[in-house]
Length: 276
Image 1 (tube, rainbow, N blue to C red):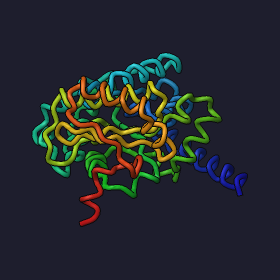
Image 2: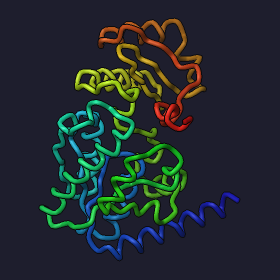
Image 3: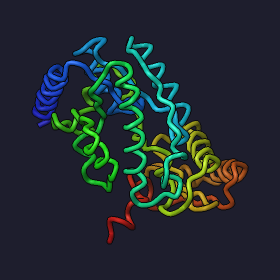
Image 4: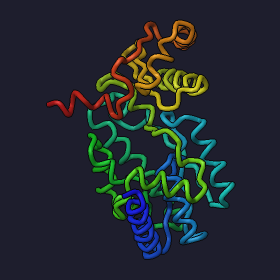
């Protein structure tokens, strides 16, 4: 069964390569995550200098991710354009309505389209895969409306396929934890500010430094709700570890620091919307 799955993944990768080849020239929206790194690598392998990378420099995008994106492109010899994007300047974004992701993605990809066109590229591709259809994702509507292509999804590639194929290609991102923009840490309706985004970024960075790979620090006003893998719950609840985290997060500006006993759940802030 495993050999069959591997063979099928390779067939899907071949379709991806054929699809990219038919496009001729693409700008890849590159976040340095698992999916976009794989897409960028394959696009560059197929198209050479007719594939470039676009990365947003924005308040909701951690500085560490931007530096990783720059390093990846330098190592692979890929032309890289950093697009300055003022997310908090987008009407309605900072008020954090349920369609915040739509509002943001539409503005972001409009900005990226302008940068791509200026560089001589008319087609933008992004890294959604077949697993990205199950959660509440209003941003996908914006991508569709703007004519942004999603070749991984079109080729039928899943997250597991992409991780396996990335490992074969020697990409360090193959086992990188899943990531979502920092704005997804806010409960809908709570205003997004630069200070709170920074609090979340630094809190998650500290957890990563302590060895917790897949984590989220959800923010509820001045309360932090930490989500981590169920297998890490006992370790993070250790008295010494908990004390260090409690002290550090309070220094960042949180008044209360809590641990979600349900563990990490992708898109947990969307559950109230999906339940109705």
